[in-house]
Length: 566
Ligand code: NOJ
Image (tube, rainbow, N blue to C red; front, side):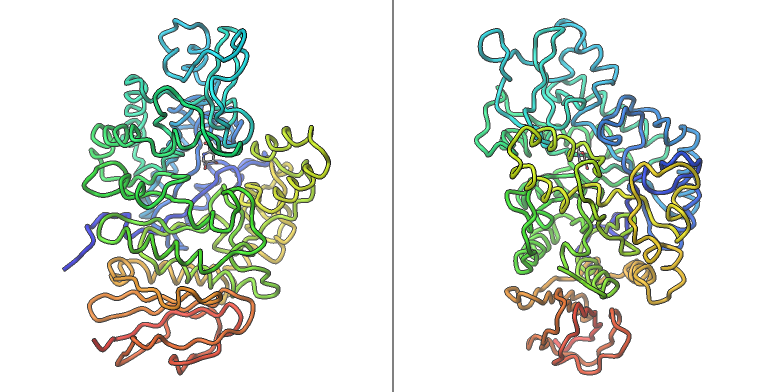
């Protein structure tokens, strides 16, 4: 009997597009919607079933579109609503669904609601946002000690009315007040607007921050994340999501995935369990924070047992109750090559394929971030002025007043983990500007390795990462073992190997990954016995005859299909 309730997103590979870096059709140095339209055949050929499009709405771009000034129209730099409609049509004709980014924890300070809200204390829109009087004499100190996720206080003083407003991100991203039913109704209307226009779901930006504790009490944590225990997955959030689901999501055949920084398994299940009717799935951060100190500072080395433990815990916990999201990369994370593999030297292709095998045979909806399918790498940033991201700029604004040693340390951290690593333009070919734009200077520098790493080259080379992804995406589609099968990890404490099995109706997939740039011995776990076995994925080009015991090459990874003996 099938254990998994059928919904289309359970069988769909999702490709994330960061529009300003994808493809520039008009030569202004910035990607746009017409650029996406020109690349739809590329996406179809790769075989993906849905696109998650980072925000393309009107925005002054304090945070590259995650600060929206009009939820019902398209950013000038990206095109028009007509272009958007053409893009959705083009996607649907090719069997590709569109997931839009729903950014409703905050708006832009240039949204008309906020302009009205800040105009006077008794404006009807005042209560759309979170305004408070300050502390101390004349109210010149912030109302509480919460800090912005980008650094510094989460409050901004507004001279006009002598009060402070809350912004958990940049000061140009004021937080909406979800306690106000009018705000919740506005969000329902925005959601329906896009669904009626033909979009197929939403990735809900920092949706687990929408409920703030009554009274906005001070936080206890270190300055960098202070206050988060009062707004990360607050119980009010569950009620708001349930209502949004009832009033909007549930009326359409769509998928929703909530971005959830700080979401643990308990909360992840509450947000996504099918019978609770909130969201379908969630992006937790535990694995992409497993190599971080205090969720912020990258460690020297990734700890494989820790990473595996997180994968296994989520696989076990969600099975039969909810549904996982499988990702290593997105526009906020530095690239996975190097990060989860250590120094890969000449073995970029092998390492990238190994990472793909390690995650995409798990249960859940798989995501690939633009450029990951050709093994794009981090950018060689050197100094503060190389960064574009508001996060890097905010950190610089804070440390520039501090002693040089702190500045240098912060720079070292930023060079390693800057969000800009993932945002450099897509490398389409070895032509000028990597074929990303025909005109002006690209909005962000192109990685100098584009002559070797680009789509054109990857599509010509049948052994490329790109072809490996294409094969894997095709294999995964409709595969009941991956969709429904049990998950069992072996050797959880092994420092170099990740080994797991998926089993369904007497068939088993055995996944073996050497995460290290060195040879490692492997023995098939003794509980596995089989009649037949077939090597179906391998990142090296030779056969593996004896799977009982083998010495794996650096980054060697493979998947065997077995007909099991019970
Ligand atoms: C999460 C988004 O992914 C990130 O890019 C953005 O800066 C914050 N939310 C604020 O919207």
